[in-house]
Image (cartoon, rainbow, N blue to C red; front, side, top):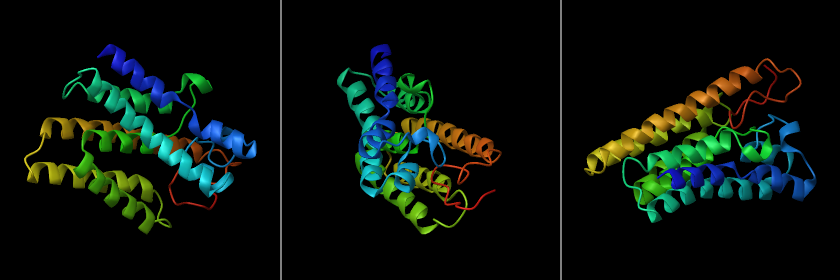
Length: 205
């Protein structure tokens, strides 16, 4: 379990947004826009294709952390530790001076790895909420609530592993709190274009 957790952290810490932005446009993603190494900031400041690559890669980090833990025999609910480690790795990457992003995509990948079918449905709901409320402040953060609510409801309805899904709820709550705190801190940085990754806010606070 310790090896799987360490592997989860290393996967989460891979600085895909930084590497892709540097390679594609020689942009330091930590110095533009929100300063976050995530798909939304990459889309605004580098391009759509690099953003898709970052989103896919960040989700893959979470899913691979689950696959690694499962391969090594880590069982529920302990498999949540590698999932959480992947998110922490994205938050505080050892490869970028312990800087990182919100971890929403990495969380989504972990959910998909743990709940392939129900996770896909919940991620689809979360995506629809985020896309449908692009002009609403914090719409992408609200998508966490709707996405997890869908996952929890479906798990209870189909008599799934409620211990695992409620544990994932705790991890989702931590990601949401981390994102909200980060956005609040960025409100007081006047030179940034907006206040956070994927919030849907484009004007200066």
